[in-house]
Length: 250
Ligand code: UDP
Image (cartoon, rainbow, N blue to C red; front, side):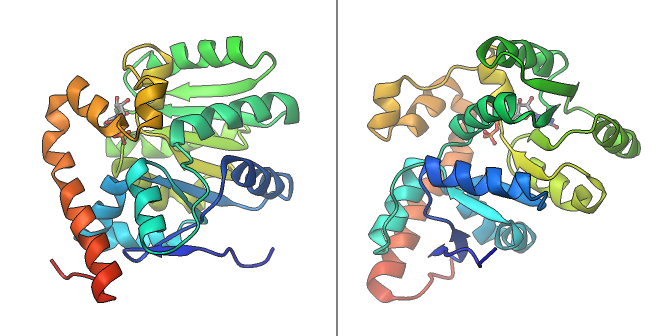
């Protein structure tokens, strides 16, 4: 497969794909059994990469980094690139579940509080009849349990592993264990199981369309305030890159 054309957003190589392009890229890789690691990068994730060089390396090594969040789409367009649309992790996760039902990909759900992944599994089975969710495992574990978790994932025969440990934990965990995991597609999906299980609300569609999902999440979880302080800094860095042509150090 030819090298992916990416755009550079504060040193993170983002693929300016639409949802449709993403799905055809991922299904062709799944069918060819090519190992693939996907990160859906919102502004918070891109800013984490600015502060943590190990995390930046993971973003730069991932097979596919997608423009999740209004901030990433805005940044790409501000820097002069064509970014067709936002590819949100939650939406991509649901689309992949539907495709898994028709293409018979086996799926494993790893992460979230005990039982949440099981409720999410039932919801997916209702939404996409025939989908094979071959295992679930909650995301609270000790280091000495990791080998067992990997064995459970591998023994399930899963083609797709969704890891819902939140960013950046899920990306670090996948990076550390990628070589041992047999699933062809690994993707971090943050709080997606919580949303499906009704434990967390997603912003209404009009707020998503008005690029206000970040505001909704802050309203629902004020504890995210500190994380979200990175957002104005993200805007400053992107504008500095645009008008001064180089990355702002701090
Ligand atoms: N979580 C987990 N293990 C941990 C920490 C968090 O499984 O050690 C789960 C948590 O239960 C929640 C998800 O990870 O389901 C994090 O959701 P959040 O919305 O914070 O993630 P984000 O979308 O911001 O990355």
